[in-house]
Length: 392
Image (cartoon, rainbow, N blue to C red; front, side):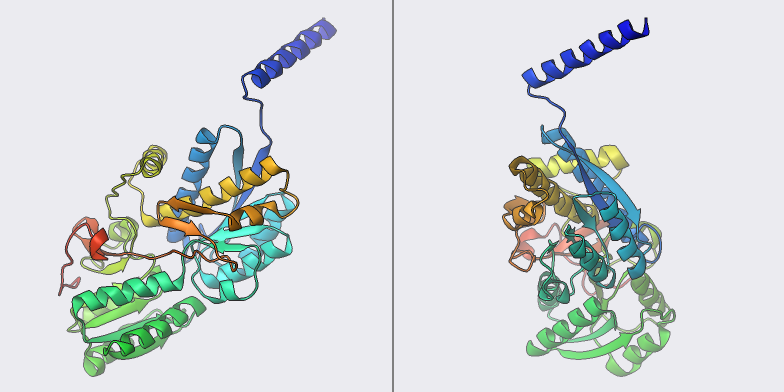
């Protein structure tokens, strides 16, 4: 009886396989992709936002590619460089074909080195330190860069006709580099610029804000840091109430998560944001992204999810092309990434020889009520900026 059952089962499997081949739907080899990302620790909020976009990319790719399917293997790097290295090494041991994720240049640099050592492509949108692309990393790619953030910050203050700005910045590599670039760019345009560096471990920003209030007396305070830094700076400013016309930040600030978690701190605050909130998509790719995002997470997507989606979709497509050519084990993923040239949700993406996106330009958003309104550049604006206006 057992032998007869096994024969019937074997014949059934052969028949199914034959019909699948005839229909052109033969089961493809599973393409494992590593996700190294902060889901706990100080960068957990932004890491979670990026992860949502990565998951949406996998869902869309698996439903639309028609031939290949990706399987994500995710490890929390706990917002720590050593844990990021360990995560990538474990992913490499698990046989992934490449790694997407990463947040914070100080975490990404060692993680990308670990990926390179393992012969794996590493793609991110979470690190803008120029050292990431100037240190000879042949398998490193990113879809955004400091030049795009700098251009947005400079353009916003130009539209404000601001005459003075105080820069408060973290001494981490990426934030310090952007602060120095902005100091030079704003100074060249005739603005009075003062700078105040702070250690990433600082918890009380009142001494810095009080100095700015009493001595600098700028029209604008520019915050160059991360989520926890913004919260501390804005809390101190809300207590001391410096006579400024605007509070401006960069990444991880103009998001619905920040509005939901800190509704008293972010009204009228500016930050980089490619998307308004609620999101508005007009392209077929954008509508599919939005529809899938809403289905998976029952909420509007934000720019962190958008970045995670774009970086991962480009990677999945490159892996699929390499698989078709039989070059997965011969450096084919990196080769296909370098050939990337297509329009995406963040605009046209092409990677230079150093792995940097040649076409990246950011937008500036402002928290207005329960929305994030794009206010710069004018041709992408979804509303007018509230200026002068501060949270208090």
